[in-house]
Image (cartoon, protein in one colour):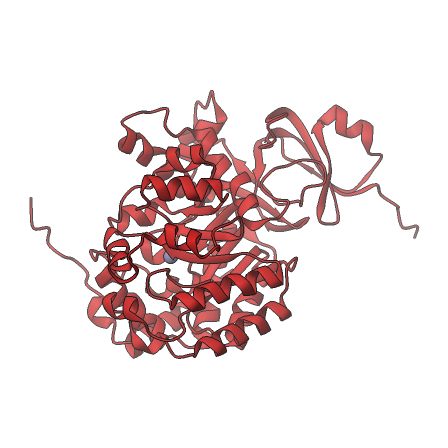
Length: 472
Ligand SMILES: [Zn+2]
């Protein structure tokens, strides 16, 4: 039998495309051709057909909307095992009574099973890249195991390895669980360096250093993490200014606000990726912009924990890159469509202005800006970009009529509208099911892990089936 020599591996043809390319943002009757990991042609069906002779597989998506894969810039996949248990707690008790005991007790095997299920939820809901801020446990084998679990499900991304180091004043004042501060600063750096060597820059899932929080990690260790990231040519990640009292604690110890301190130490730049960043003052916002720093905004989490609302317009106008994240299941961060809708709505309330955040803006944040944070050629569908694509079914009654597709996309889409997902040129979800893994087994394994962990960590007391509202 003669093996046919095709021009391209896959040709997607016939549907609408939101490209996120400012030069040509919308194509009505479009086509995209992929060879290997990359997009090699995009345009109208006629334009692409003129460029290529044949495709190994042709895929008609005429009833679907193609968008770039969504990029979740801040998640904690392991926390999915504690979903619903922290309900009604603000950040400090949420951490001290719920999440840090869970993190101190979770085993390597449980964390990997949790990551696999949470990554599956990501990809089934249209996320193609995730920054997983994994902080328990963080030995080398578990960190690499989590990265491998994410790859098995077919996702691209980063494991931002959570770093605590030695306990400092900020940790004591934040009531942090001492069991998480188990490695010396030297060991933290060495383990992270080994992990980066195993999955260096350019791997499908990279490793970055992630001093967990600017408030409760030793300042010297944060500076060393920045040096490590620079020498490995990767970025680094940290929670920063999520709650008002974190900033107050930091200021009371260091006599300066967190972003000003980062700038003073020379570690605020385009490698800096900060989660949340709600409580920056005007001077900090200006510094973040000048330094082209990255902020990951988690609007659903911020509402759930009542942390505040990010100053989106001022940050973006100053020049900071603001992308979007979910923060994971334990803070009701289900998927990126919910994150986009919340990001859109919250700014309207903050600014009392419906033009302050539009469907186009939040889709840019969830795609292009995420690609900029990752420093990868993702988040836009253009010739030469990595082929991370999502196909959304817009035919449901909740999308009808959708005169302006992008609005229905960010305001009305549910996870089950995601029909197909392509990551790195591979179809990893087809007709709403993973092509890479046994979904039922992954869910069953994670459910067993959740039961074991909740009992062992003494969290069963948080399982309450009904709290009668105090007002009626
Ligand atoms: Zn977080």
